Image: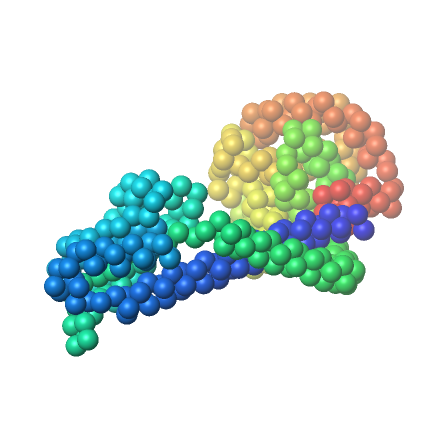
Length: 412
């Protein structure tokens, strides 16, 4: 339950935050757009009221008087241009001289089709709207342009932020209330998904184990061998500090390493004596057959490195590709040590179990040739403890031990 809460709660909190930011941004944009529309409407209204004839007749005194009236009412700066876009007059409201200096850093543009245009700017911690509208005479002929710089007053700006705050707070409360209602349902659904996912995962692992055991039985091997090899391999992987994903690949490979033997004829697979060259050539094909079997399964394909490379040798003398050194995947190098060790120390119908010291001598002599020397050294450090625990253990105990390992690395 705790893990479910840890999984869901951060996502709910992030969704809550993102939704609040989104709504706040939308509210801010809507409010600013309203101010834009207000400033544009004011400028357009003034343009309609502006006597264009004054501009045509160059009556500067009367133009200045009209502009002074505009700066008293709505705008901090007013400029008038003729039809050739040359400034005729400018009026700056008292106290707005610095605003004029600040505006010089922004490019000045005229509408291409003599239509209204405006730019929203942030100057000296104030919202400023620069509005430009055409001036037309009674015959609808373009006489010039009126530009007004509208300054959003502090009260209006404070109202915008207050609206944003109220809206965001409302959204936060609404989302919180909705979350409180839906959260138990989300937890229950998530718990059900997790349970079903674990069942599927357990089923896949059981399928691998059954398939591996079926091949082992066909090869006159035992369940216990597969269990021990997997446990030896995991202990060795932990000793060399492989990450969890690599260890999961190793476990899959341990289950399925010889799966390709299902395609080897019984006359070769079960032959009690030494294989001749042609028979051994056929036997070696079990690696490619194993790769083909798992290739089309997303879950089983995690075993590929072990299936494909567990017969490679560190000096390049193995098969099927003749890989050498660290070109051999590390999980295959680890598995090769565990597999050979358990094969040497296990009793078979055709041979007795080899003593521990003799088996270790064979592994040690093979370091640098068959095996990775670093992995052999790590195995020698842990082998006595693992051998004492696993060698004579009953099959049921080994299965229980393996289930604990699966629980650690697969969370089941």
